[in-house]
Length: 178
Image (cartoon, rainbow, N blue to C red; front, side, top):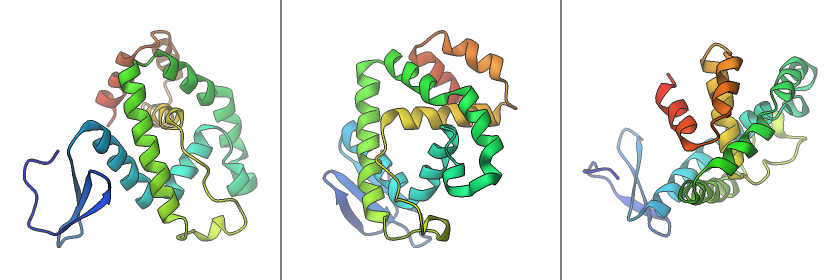
């Protein structure tokens, strides 16, 4: 989906997903269709940021203290009150089949990337399990967390938008985020 790519060599990382790396170490990818696009994007996110994704998922679901201990209790308590896990399930149910399909491709890519990156564990993961499989609703939970943190915690606005239960809410989140 890039009109022109720098003069660099490409490697097919997944079927239909060609990864390019510029001399400045900027990564690009080229795909033939939307399925490959979402899978490739997920792969890049999963392989480059596996533990950041897991930390953010744990934070969104109120389970960060499993890794961070007592210092994350306050955050976990707040996140469990907000219940992004339940809200993300409700959002998922309101999405069109096309959007659900694309989010499944994205999640498949993340899982492939996670498996590739499994050997690069940060020190705080030494005694804990590796990140578990990624599901589409995890991406929605992260979107809710991102919105919550970057709108100065305007929870009433977030909850009133949840009543719509349709894709316009997600598009609004993406467009209005800083």
